[in-house]
Amino acid sequence: MTPNPSRLSRLQQCQLSIALLSALALGSCASSPSGETNSTQDDSKLQVTTTFLPITNFTKAVAGDRAQVTQLLPNNIGPHDYQAKPEDIQKLAKADILVMNGLEMEAFLEDMVKNAGNSELAMVDSSEGVAVIPNEEEHGDEHKGEKEGDDHDHEDHEDEDHEGEEHAEGDDHGDEDHAEDEDHDEKKDHAEGGHDHGENNPHIWLDPKRAIQQVENIRDGLIKADPDGKSTYEANAAAYIDQLKQLDTEFTEQLKPYAGKTFVTYHDFADYFARSYDLKVEYLVGIPDENASPEDVKRVINAAKSSNLKTLLSEPQASSNPFTALAQDLKVQVGTFDPLETGGTDALEADYYLSAMRANLKSLTTAFGSQPQTWMPAQPKQRTVATLPQWVQVKF
Image 1 (cartoon, rainbow, N blue to C red):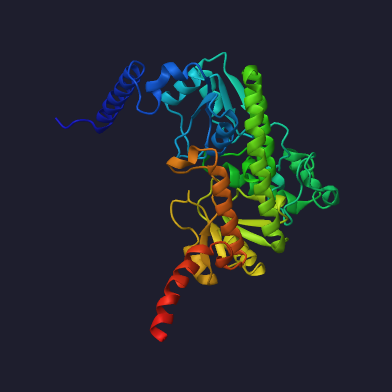
Image 2 (image 1 turned 45 degrees about the vertical axis):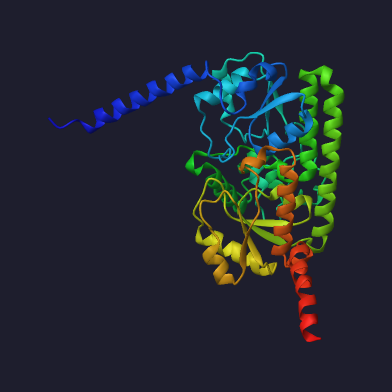
């Protein structure tokens, strides 16, 4: 008799479930090759679980050697694509502190925390008190309308962007038909595919100024959980904040010549960054969309031409190069602007944020038309100088 395919499928699922449960049971007794072998020594430290890369970078910078920091998500999976696994819930069950970005970037956490059953788990929301951009105001013509508390002057925008003042209640203003159309498109961008960023844009870590506030929140959270480590956490945070301030200074000085210009990214992650440095940004698709509409393409083309861009900025997380054909049509290059949601094995270290953001700065200034030699002078010139004596000797 021919086996029933659906029955085989259910059997296979059952077998996989049994295998997974067995692996978890064995894992609780055996040591893991990723640091669990030193569990006796690590248990004496504060156990801190972070969600994804920038939060890990900031937390490691503050914690130093005093706490054991473990990232919840794999390096190669970002918050948009993450699906919880049983072993991840075990990380939360063993943790003293959970540090998150906040602003609904980690919408998966609510169920995970409940399932972990860790009543002693302290939660640190690094977005606490940070000025945010409501999603409904994010993509207006002038990219205006940050919430009250931002250090940017937004009083001039009250009349123009009145529909955004009530944040998520912009639909109530029935006298502005175009606002309703924009709101409809925005909700579509964030609802298709099952992913929704929530009320506010969560990508605050890409603005070094706001990253400083995140580091301060993480510092305070660690001190609250471990008062004896206050001096260590304060010193570490101060040192890292100094580096973030230097990073901010570099961005400010090098991007000043391009004030008011627009750059183009693949998806909608760079609004905080753009506002912080008096720039504008257009993107090809909004999460969770992966396919651009003709209107999206036209918008990007207009932005690239108006700013005379030399480069369109894709991202390492894109499954393919979405700008290839468009770049050929515009006769420009394709670069990258990394939103730092995933990375390689070196991405867990505190300095990774600093180096990755400096790489973004180089990509951005190149997109605006700066000469590559400005940022990479050493190696090409060294090779040229090395050949000069040979030519001189032959000539004489």
